[in-house]
Image 1 (spheres, rainbow, N blue to C red):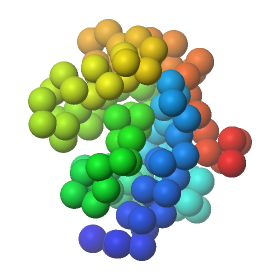
Image 2 (image 1 turned 90 degrees about the vertical axis):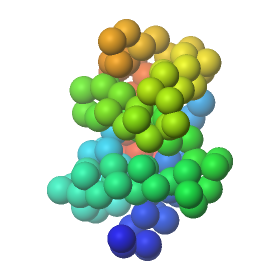
Image 3 (image 1 turned 60 degrees about the horizontal axis):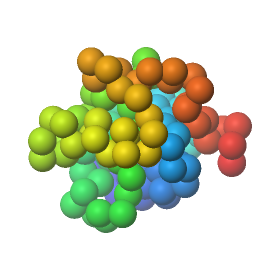
Image 4 (image 1 turned 135 degrees about the vertical axis):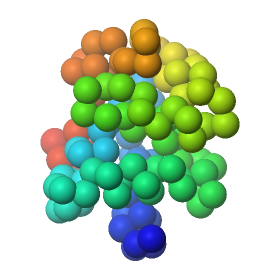
Length: 108
């Protein structure tokens, strides 16, 4: 596990605004490691053991799919957290993904 990379991922994820989402790849590109989307996913899978305040539910795959939902204790928790922020999810996919997508490369 690359602790320093994981810490950088967590710092970016903490900046995702309420009601917005980003992707593993967008975080990787922002950190200058465009081919490391999978490593961002690993970081997100371990985020709950590092800091409970990391809004890991706001990180999805490039198509808006809730691919990390099994790491939340119950498969429905990720969707519930997103819906509580006003994000619509149907069949594990964010509706209007482009409207709620937050790209750290453009926003930070």
